[in-house]
Length: 113
Length: 115
Image (cartoon, rainbow over all chains, first blue to last red; front, side):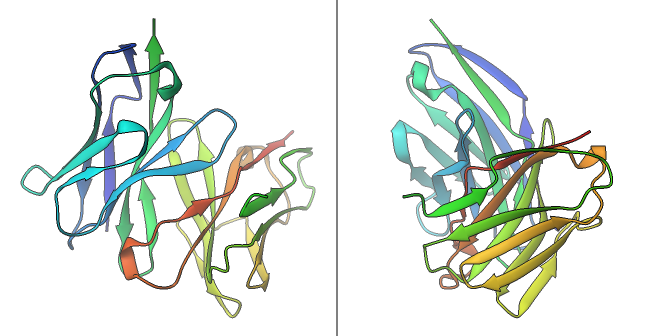
């Protein structure tokens, strides 16, 4: 079985500060990992994904994540937060061969002036 | 036009009523999914379908049923709605190719309130 743990249901940063959203996974097989973003009153949009190859993955809007197998982590970072980054972020991992996603509980990012 | 659409976007209903949520997609994908989102719980899979003849239960299928009317349409029904089914419901699609690394594309969601 697959599982995802997102540490911190709410994270608040100042505009221009580093964004770090934490994700740890559990998987009995090599995982494929995803970060999705949900803006208010919208569906989920893919930010980035790790499949194979390079462990540092770059996504949209300046976000990136690094797959660390030894730490079973896939933390999301952005060097400088912008007000428009305020949203809820979900980490997800695939399950088996069915392309089913198992989601974390989400982290709501607040960006303050 | 949006690739994945859901109707209605908002619905208020009463306990015991039957309700159907509809999802349509123009992406040409074979795989479709229904999730529910609850605060603090993330998204949980209700049902998924790999093609018109292939329907599978997800982790929380009790109290729900689905119908895959065509490749592009996947409906979720609550036969007798209850208040704890109040949630935000999302439909998603993915392509059959590429295996486990497929991205899923989400609709805008349906906010359902059961009184």
